[in-house]
Image (cartoon, rainbow, N blue to C red; front, side, top):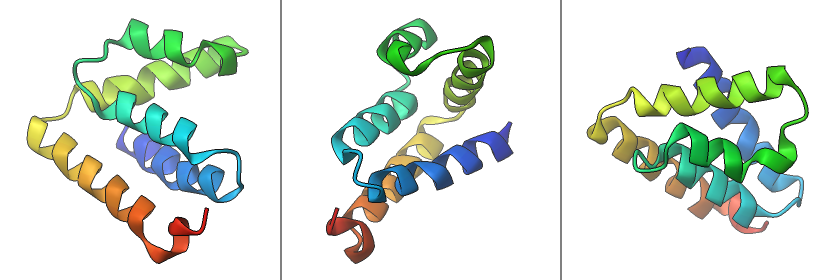
Length: 93
């Protein structure tokens, strides 16, 4: 489960650098990290990108991975994402 989260977090900044729009990416990450956003709300927000049962299952596992974490861990993930977005490598996008 942790491997899935690591892989998705590693792939998402690449989506940002592809020029597809970082605001969408930041919103998806922010909602994934936010423990107040339920699994159903998260799936609803991503509905336009879910084409198969495998997509739905992956999104459910990804969000559940964050729901199982402590507030301290979620805060650290948020700090890491802010560091990535604020880095000189991502700032250009």
